[in-house]
Length: 509
RNA sequence: GGCGGAGUAGCUCAGUUGGUUAGAGCAGCGGAAUCAUAAUCCGCGUGUCGUAGGUUCGAGUCCUACCUCCGCUACCA
Image (cartoon, rainbow, N blue to C red; front, side):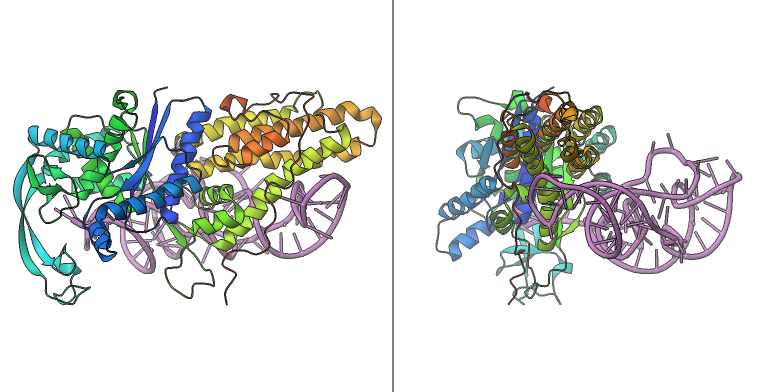
């Protein structure tokens, strides 16, 4: 299989990392980890978007230079990737020299190819906001923020001939029905293109904090062009002295939220076409996480704090919850109560307790040594089935469905315990061989389940393997039956997902 | 207005190219068991499949109209 390059958007650093950033990052990380489990050559890219007027303004308000401001805030995002156990291969910053050089080269290429021209951008401009407004955005013809009357301004800009790519884009969409997922987003993007494309300005004359145009240094690159190019620039300098472009380009998957669909599904591919570069294979547009009910919403805008969840339940719980409770690709409601419920019902009760009871029985009935036996055929079949299903779903970024498929094994194993009643077998020495089969099956099946879940539960999966006396290796080919060595000693280590008394958000005063 | 999506059990949702008694998880009720983090397992749902028509031997699954909700309808990022 070809190397896998996947990306998250780069996050705009004017604010703090929040749930949305964590969500996309986690989803991409699950894919990256899965592909690495399969031994694939993976390059997972994420990072921060640091130019633009907004950053410059916030920096000024704080009395910082733009660079000092973005340095500080970018570090917050880098820390976020660690907090959620993301395993990116490179964390790009658009203020990197390598990136800025690439942007200039790319813009020059677009211009050399005849896709850039000088024009005039005009519109209603509010000096207070330092931004252009459309008439319908105004309130009674006044700026909604400042209540002042905006001026009609003209600005000389350089434009990207996006309109010229309407037909090529449509052709690409029609030839690649999987280009954008889910289907509804594909339709949305295609309809937008079919409705006619206007040229877009790719530079700003009034903004200093950005990449200067190589042929007109008095203008800076419009921040979205700058930002989108990160996906390509990173490969040229992520590894000093090495250009990874030939190895990884184009991206297998680019993940993003629906609010930035147009930039990624229209402008970005057009930019690549204009530079004669291959387009990303697929774009995955996930939905919004919305906070439902929660009595604590005294103050509006109360969002679920991913770091609070990590602190109380652990990072695996956050990763599991976000991918499990909301179908990846759809919008969905989340809540602290739901985190609490799923943590206990699924992670603690179904999985954690399974590990606990299996190791406890092996200790009690076999002195902690995994007996020699063959995995029960029905469980073996369930593992094989789940292995295929999980892989298929993850390849399509159907992460919720992948979890469902893996969880069937967990449920089957719990059912197997009840069906076989090892505690009964243990009372009859004549049935020792039967008990061996049951105990081996449980240990082996739980081990396989851990590997199936390892991409989502990077902390817990190795702990499960260790508890079962298996090597700490989550290679995908080990997600198969009969691969636990007989004679190893189990090493129970207490509850994997301890019960949590107080749910988050309950501390309403 | 235009384009697109969605309305299925109390809740969250699955339901391939139309075909036997519409499914899962959660919650609820009842029961079993005791290895285990009082965890697990089993049983229990007469749901007008948004409304009204239509096509068909047969429609949640196709067609028409309508109702409700949502998204998009471009340069803050």
